[in-house]
Image (tube, rainbow, N blue to C red; front, side):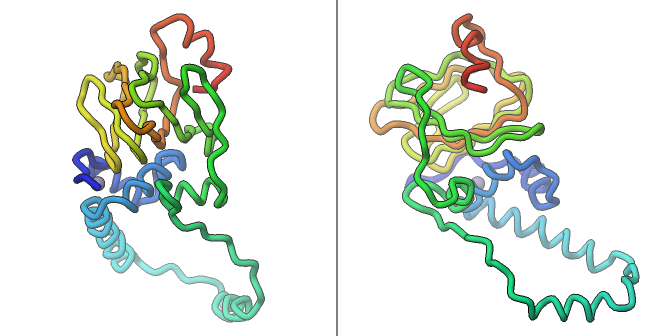
Length: 211
Ligand SMILES: [Zn+2]
């Protein structure tokens, strides 16, 4: 795999360590972390700071029988949460969202497909499948957009993004990503607000595709 050149910005790793990122973004960050040793090291540093803060925090007393209640419950059988490992090009956190199944693609037209992984009031995360040479309609953003490449590569006004690279888009970015020729480009993308398409047709279709 070629070297990763586009990383998660440090403040976002700090927010991930603090547990304050919306789930859709956490999914992209966790997936990048599983592919990127540099960002894992940065996360470790932030977690060490969090650990130091916990060590220093003043203790708050719990109820008298908290410990004995906890110890009693440890003996009760619990249904294990299924854990899904990385599979093929899909990192563990993506397989967790897919519950271990392959993606179920929905066609968006022009060969572009998506599989929505997660949606709530704070954002959504989806897999995107873009045939080699195909452009995603020109769009800008109402909020933040994170795109992690899982297969192939794409290029836009800001550069080229290969496997493991993350593009961070915000209100100031208006771009036309084009999948590079060759393998289809498969990405994990998270947004916290609907995209804004310039052209009329994509805008018309937007509610249909929920992008
Ligand atoms: Zn990284």
